[in-house]
Amino acid sequence: MAKKPRVKVPKSVNKGAIIEIKTLIPHKMETGQRKDSKGNKIPRFIINKVAVTFNGKPVVTADLHPAISANPYFAFSARVTESGTFNFVWTDDKGQSVKTSKSISVN
Image (cartoon, rainbow, N blue to C red; front, side, top):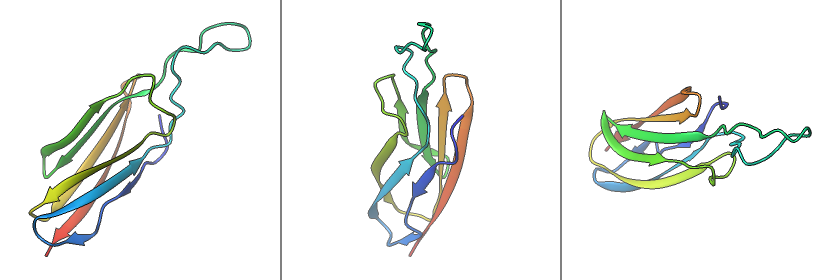
């Protein structure tokens, strides 16, 4: 599976603030369309699902397809009304997942 993802979440914000969250996960993202030097198809191997929760509630979910680039980058906005933890999960075609979390404090 992929190496450690990079995630940027502010450490603290004012209550009700809309924040931008940025993520990047290193992954080759093989589409299944290319062939190796012997002419054999290289099997598809992509991150096919991204899920983000905040304090256990869904924030973002995305189903990915072979057209997504290598090392996928995602940025999205969220309104934060309480302190808590964002949990991030990336799942690939082999069912392996990479997880990380980031906490945020509300003033």
